[in-house]
Length: 93
Image (tube, one colour):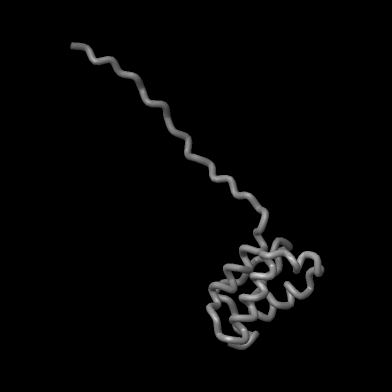
């Protein structure tokens, strides 16, 4: 696949920009500081971008790994729905 191949859905960045193509994602990873590029999650994302662009890998996997790298370290709390207390009934015979 060429580097100009677009993702199915653009990847939204925290600053409001979008990564639309493999090339955009590659430039984003290449532009970050070297210390940040050495983290395992960015290494994996870069490997999948190269795999897709040069050997025709799965585009969805490259997008998924970019999303994982962007959201690394962000904790999402799942709020349990509030349950009503059950009523106590007394059986009268």
